[in-house]
Amino acid sequence: MEPVFVDGTGRRRRLFTVLGAALGVLVIAGALFQILLPLTAPLVDVYAVYGLAFLPLWQLAAVWCGFTALQVLAAAYALRLDREPATPLWTVPLQQVVYRQLLYLVVVQSSVAALLGGRQRWQAMARTGQAAALATAR
Image (tube, rainbow, N blue to C red):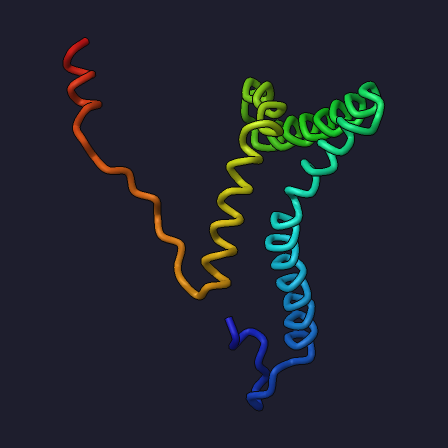
């Protein structure tokens, strides 16, 4: 793709450096959002527990329902853009309870592995053959 942005003298055009700088800013911002937000996401649950202890229950329920409604609307819009059925939308509230905790576990494991300089390997399950025995027994 570089020959598109190089003129006859071999110098890069100004457009390439401007686009490169803009792309660099987007990549850095994307990395911050992909790293910092997942690392700080467990704080949301800490604040929710704080809210259970010190805020009125109706206020906490209103915030949670409003946040979940926004997520359902965003998911519905994404499914509509992809021309997909809206049937999986009922799982969005479950994501707040189950999937987020699994995501925290993965983020913490990956961050610790990155800080220690190691690689995070796939967590392989030991194959025992019991599933095949259950399938043939039925």
